Structure formats: C-alpha cells, structure tokens
Image 1 (spheres, rainbow, N blue to C red):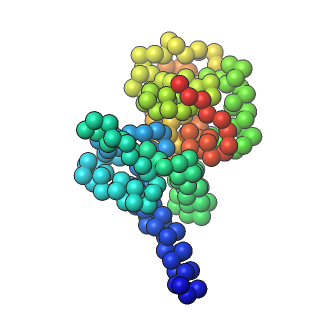
Image 2 (cartoon, rainbow, N blue to C red):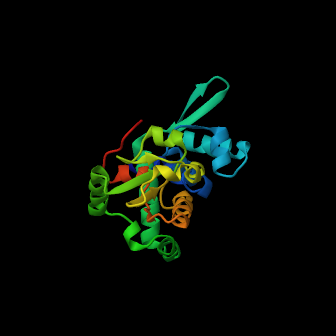
Image 3 (cartoon, rainbow, N blue to C red):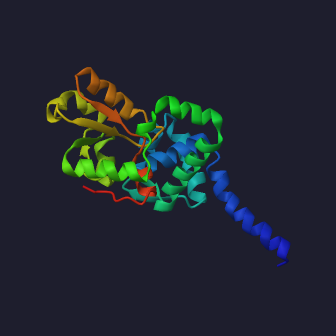
Length: 220
C-alpha cells in the first residue's frame, strides 16, 4: 500500500467516529447512555423520538463501535463501549462551549460561575458532603443512581422530591445534580426545594463530568 493510500485509510477510520457523533440526537443518546445501560424503548422515550428513529441512530453508533448491545429476552439493551466514550462526549461539549459563542452565552445563562465546578471545587464539595456540611442529592432515575453516582449523594429522583421533603434537613445546603450541564432536572429540583424554604443549589456536573475529572464514583 502506498503511503498516501495508507494515510487516507487512517484518517477515514477516525472520521467514522466524527460521522457517528455528527447528529444532535446521537449526542443526546450518548449522554443518556453515559448514565447506564438502557433499552431502545427507554432511550427513545428519553430522547423524545420514536423507537424506529432511535434504532437507526443506535445502529450508526454501534457501527462506529461507540455502543454495545446485550439481549435480555425480547429486549435489546444498549450501553457505551467504554468509559472513554463518555469522556469523548464531555470533551466534545467542553470544546464546543469554549469555541462557540452561542453555546457559551447560553450556558452562562443557565449556570452561574459557582455552579460550574473545577478540580478544586469538586474536591471541596466532596469534602463537605463527607462531613455532612451539605446534602448532595441525585435527581436522576433510581436505576441511573444505582449504576454510579457521586460519593455521599442520596438518590432522590425528581418525581419523588415533593413526597420526600421531610427527609432533607432544613438547616443545611442542598446540592442537586442530574445528567450534566444540558440536563434540566436539577434546575426543576432546586426550584421546588426553594419553594419549600430549602437552601438549594445545583451544579453543572453529572457522572460523566465527575468521571472525566478523574474523581471517584460510588455504586449501589
């Protein structure tokens, strides 16, 4: 094989990943799968698309070796093919926020500076949660929490918060997180908690961001 042909082949292989992540919906599916294994039916529902379209997107991701499947009876479950795929999503989003003014402006509108954690503030939050100075709540579905969550976080899915308010201390800050910066569940949780007089805040981090920063996760 000639040198030029070899180089073309190498770039073409890498471009397979680029093509696979060129769809907004496929990026959303990667973010959802970064929370844990899910069936195509669940993925379709959470991405607000029909099952047929979700299957087509997942086929593209599978062909690029970004996702894997596992059959369970008549259902097919999908999962990311590695932690590096979750990190790829975080890196893509971070680069986009750094270089695309439109995205940066929107993210600054959604998240104030203290809510966007860096290495130091992540470690500080971990230390406060360990001491019990703050209560960290994971407002994702319970199955996602069980797959992996921030250390010392409590599982309190968004739809259960109103019925479980008495479980939360009124004299400490409550910190809510969900799937990451594009997820709105934590904002809804904070609004609900503030309605009831709690000192509530949200953070931009989800499990993928925490993991990409090299910090430990906990499992149930």
